[in-house]
Image (cartoon, rainbow, N blue to C red; front, side, top):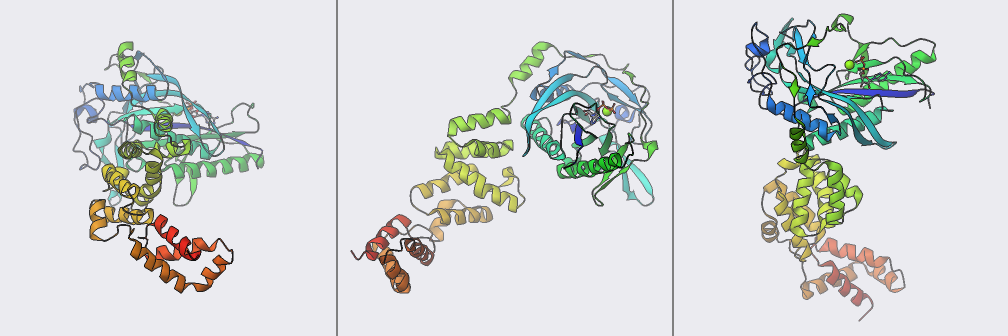
Amino acid sequence: MSEYRPVIGLEVHVQLKTRTKLFCGNLIQFGAEPNTNVCPVCLGLPGALPVLNEQAVELAVRSGLGLDCRVHETSLFARKNYFYPDLPKGYQITQFDRPFATDGFLEVADAQHAGRVRIRRIHMEEDAGKLLHDRLPGLTAIDLNRAGVPLVEIVTEPDLTSPAQARAFLAALKQILQYLDVSDCDMEKGSLRVDANVSVRKRASDPLGTKTEVKNMNSFANVERALEFELKRQIGLLASGHSIRQETLLWDAERGEARPMRSKEESHDYRYFPEPDLPPLVFPRERIERIRAALPELPRLRAERLVRQFGIPQYDAEVLTAERALADYFEEVAMAVRDGKTASNWVMGDVLAQTRQRALTITALPVRPGSLAELIRLVRNGRISNPIARQVFVTMIDSKREPAEIVETEGLAQVRDDAQLEQWVAEILTGFPSEAERFRAGDQKLLGFLMGQLMKKSRGKADPKLASEILARRLSGT
Ligand code: ADP
Ligand code: MG
């Protein structure tokens, strides 16, 4: 469409799932009363010294290994100096020229392309506090509970070529970090934040164009929208003979536009220097390898295993492994019923539909895998039909009762009694005489119609196999 090609690189801040902060023992509690989880270290009081949280380092290393990075035995902390009210120390402890991980990649597929997106680097750093603009009328308040919370910043190469691919990258990244149990990646709680760098050029072989950086998106969908907006703006400028100014823009989701940040909020002279209060971070190779050996099975391998082990299609395996908890759920059901395809039909069908409709997570779904397996067995044993089972499934969620009990108390068991089936067939033949006639005259399609009417009359309870045998027999006059 346009002669310009997008070039996108992402910087993603991810909050590590630790109990305490990166350099002190304060608890991390989302939603805690402001300024209750603070101490001299994270407040930056004179003389307070940081002590590195080992758990944070371990999670960071896991993220590096999960993203196929080289994890370095030695990395360095640095001070990034700037003045802003959310930063009581006046500097942020981060990593600069010696990050703990470099040169990784993530496989990303969207509707248009599939390929590797290179990860340039991952470094550890502490979060800043949070400015609250809506607490005190006319004033800005500061909550320093977040100051010192451990983050990793994951920086990609400018390998992404469309907003949709950027969104797909983020989905894949979130998936892997959740599998690794490194972060909950909840954008709404700020535990995953994205800065999107974007430029355009005419040919893939051209040098990179001047980029802008877009911040402040609160969902992956908004990252995609913000990038689309910004690309259009840049292309419009270039097409009309203007040039791009390198700047930072803030996305306004309400208005659907990105506006330049006030320039004083942007300062690039950070005067980085090595953090004098922390020794180099040394993480021996054996320890890195021990963590690698203990990594959980990641989505791609798990999908391959599900295909092999349960004989389900690749597509099913990809949907089921989208989330670790969903894959766990599926596996439990499939093991219990020893039938992968039936289990996957249920989980991808009614289970996902109901959790979405009720805005539940899979873990919060009241029907646990064992109960779904029991329901599937009731169908397999011919106790209930499939449509009835779907109805029972909804009742299981609403009432938290077990399937056999629901079938029992609500009289939903399949009817296989000849006398009752004969009676329904007779009623259908008298109820639809002309259809019966046309069937006898050779219109085979009408058998399906008459069966449908019979199932309706029995409210789904007639055993379809037996009922259709009787129907066919009566229609042919035997
Ligand atoms: P800066 O020095 O402005 O922070 P970096 O070179 O560190 O820029 O890159 C930051 C991020 O921006 C990386 O994710 C990188 O891939 C991306 N990036 C760099 N140059 C461009 C560009 N011309 N167009 C799009 N993204 C870019
Ligand atoms: Mg940068």
